[in-house]
Image (tube, rainbow, N blue to C red):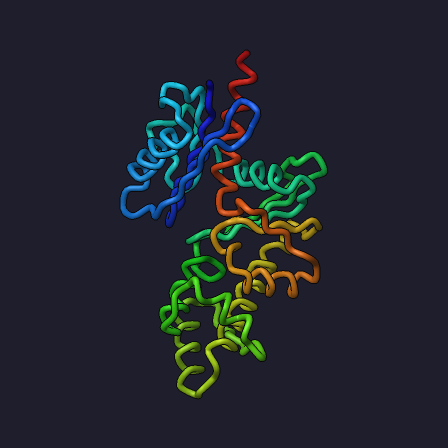
Length: 262
């Protein structure tokens, strides 16, 4: 059996997906990138092959994407994050027209046409505001785990504004709110609203059109997704494999490349 591999080496996490010849997922894996993302990727690929009960020699084609794609020697080809995230998101949500992907240290908005082709995109990879790293810093300031933010948001009575666009200053705002006795849940709701506002400011540069789809690690945060939906004034679709959209897109490209060779 031939398999097709997608590897997404992000700045914070590494994701891999194996597909069969019909495009069905055979195995997937995710791990923290640490200081050597390519080595982590190699380990995840080995685990995925074992899970799928195949030999690495049965991987007919592979594509790498993400921050560390150029340092991964095991791929047959590389592809941009925009191309892979667009392809993966469209596969997961066939009627997606706007894709908002929020990763550990960047955020991107991609607008697609009716056939799933990229019409335009914009990317923020220079500032932590509006990324997963921003939420990690704020969670530390609040003394909670990132995984607790969604539950806190659900208990909020109001969203306390966090106006600073700089992560350092926003952290100071959070600490000041806590010192004044503001409920952590209300601060979290304000943080989610602030990120949603920043991401939508990016989206305005390419146009925001339904169906709006959210991918990336931050898409797992239901509180943020709720804030994004409210700010965008439209529903936000979060697919089950939202965090794997880039790896899935890379694997689909590997499958397509192999099909073109036949």
